[in-house]
Length: 252
Ligand SMILES: [Zn+2]
Image (cartoon, rainbow, N blue to C red; front, side):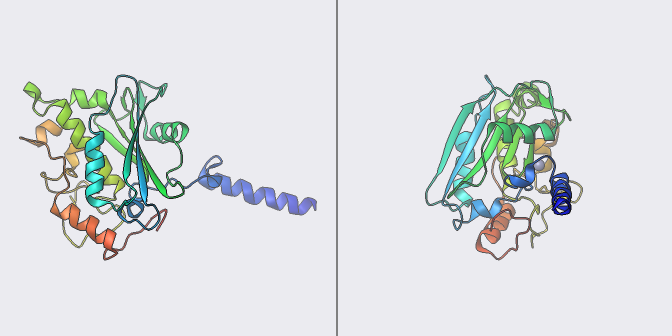
């Protein structure tokens, strides 16, 4: 008996070691794009809630735009609902991507409800530990947008304006949750930027790499895109229809 107990202990401690803390009992968090099909198709989740958790005075301005962009590509017959909640994150200095993950799973709930998919958009005070980062996608259901850095990224004479930058960054991170570009599939179209993996080589796409960088004003002149381009949309359609094979899906 004692021997069995010991073996059991050994197995469980190895398991929890692999996944970190007691995560193996919880829902899997996945990688950005890991819940792309859960959004694009209606099979598992007929409804969706997009949660905006924001520090006081860091209200997101692009909530309706995120909803519209998702409605354009995702199949959610039960509708997509916005849930906005002021949240005291208790960090207002530098955020690592791990801090973002921890805060999301501390303040938010599971991504996969019974028939509802939940994605989380965090708007904390402070910056990413890499200050050139305006936004990050950290797992299959979580992104953060750093408004302090977005404000700093406003160009000379307000072009682009901080509102424009925030809209673009927010939709850019949404695109990563949808798996763009090539995060969980291989596009038949050659539109991934070879020197910035996971991004579009088209500066008219919201998935252009510089959108989430504080240098954005130096790389894009004129209006910032806040839409997916035709190649991005073709990828999303291919994934939704099943023509494009998706991998690393938490659910499919
Ligand atoms: Zn990006």
